[in-house]
Length: 452
Image (cartoon, helix red, strand yellow):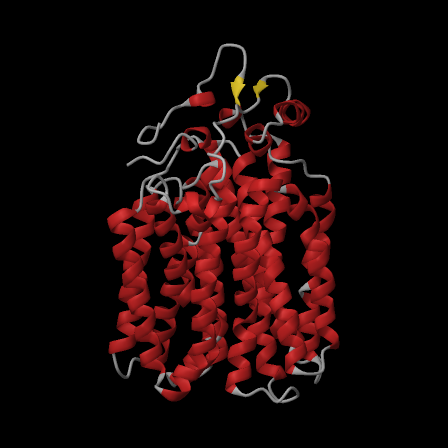
């Protein structure tokens, strides 16, 4: 019944352990590695483009318009990939996309080496973004549904560290390849194929989510997966009541039972990634506009702060309530961005420190994208809810990444920074008003209805 959280199959018995309460096993770690490897590839693929474009500008004759288009292309592709994959993964399962999207991503990433015109790179970046969007959805959903709730926060937070690690690693790889000659930018883009190829074998042998199987009338298959991977002492998940016939998943997400959670999911993710990607993609240009000497060093500090922040977020995610972490992160980053916006003549080191604070706190809070977002929705709506939130966030991040170099060039850097302040303040207000607490909630209980 909506308004109540029922424990369902989360209550242990004397003879078996509930699926959501089983101990952590080696197979859980295998799923985590398969998921984090893909997320690392996602972060690397998105991070490398900003560095490659700084070197590709002259050979490809890139105008500020082309820079904006190419910088935001992958994020626009992510919108479509996430939006379309969510309902498909809820209807047909997580495994088909999870097993094979890295193979296609390897091929498309390698093709970037041979491009000869901005339009060709634009098409490839849109396609790569589409595949990244599919992985954002299925990696979160599959790992969430396999992980015991006792360690769910910490395991899912590893995805955030992996993404930040990939994004930061791209910056270092770009630095190492920058001196390899006029085609250095091509080698940077080709490098994004390596992690995709490396993780592919781990994904091919991954089974379907037992929670999804049970909810879609495949109880016997769900029991087989649980018995084969976890032993006879773990009780398979029970099916939840099917959705009303004819009720589309997007319509369910907008229904009174789920629309507040849908709004929170879309708002918090969008408000978080707009400054994250806009600043991260063009951090050197923003620092140059603020007259900071050694903007490369500043960019390096920014990217290291992303990795450090994601790691710290992993440590605190299960020690704070989800709401406190969420609202607090928006408040701190908005205050730091406001200081950058309104304070004139700040010394270069102070500007770099404030940018590092923004990067570190945003990256720490990005753990909630992997932990909090899947906890907001039941199994039959999880991929659709994640996909819709990702799609909403990528509209904002793609538009902001496209506009940032144009706004900095036309209106000045402080106008661009002020826009980031407004976005972060909006996230704080919406989450303070409506974000529910989901820490330690059983996934089977979530399926019974969102609490009022």
